[in-house]
Image 1: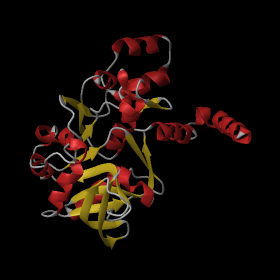
Image 2: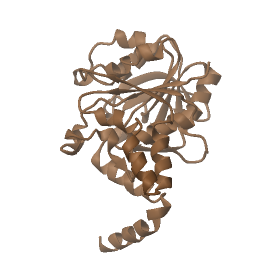
Image 3: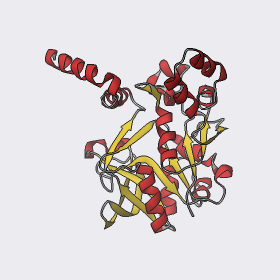
Image 4: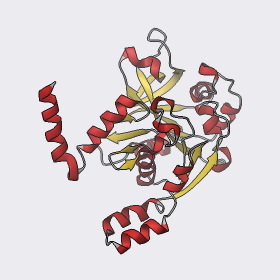
Length: 292
């Protein structure tokens, strides 16, 4: 059956961006002129998702406000004839049916995903991390849409994978498996942040998943793991013993906006795609590079 629901965990503190994230959720930090999480929601909508659940926590009320309508702002833009901006603002609240649920205790990504169980019901669903943007390189299709097509063809859970340097595998969930087609692996292992010596490969889980609803049963039985948190990768490893899971080595780029350096890189790279600033930004970067 077609996947129409998505869950986006966005309850974390964002400690790597303190003090900024004391009052501003990291998912609301802007990439050029758009909050990070809006890019994620737009990827959902472009891929055919119609219902989205965002898992939020303390200090994340601005996420709800962002995806709600803003009558006073809309009236002011209309009065001042800023019609292009008005259309952008109105579009935000109409992109999809967006719901919110509160995560009262932060016990890891697995616990956050568990909050989507009632929303998802018995349907397969997409899971997207709210602080990561994926961009396709050689296809007009969003990466999530490509994953949905694989899910429909294989009737199995699908995980986006990205090749990383061996000395960086300890930062990610790492998957291992057998090649079954171009860019596709039949997964048989998944490990949370292993050492380079223990990693089954250098293929990192890349913030996008399509899950069968059975994942919730495995999450409910998952004990606290690394960092004393309920790890999604631990539940996935258990699920792998009973269910097929496909790894999709996507063609494109991952922008992890959850750390400072990559946040700055993302703003520069995506800024160069904005026609209104690309020229001046290019000139600035050339001038800056000449001084280094």
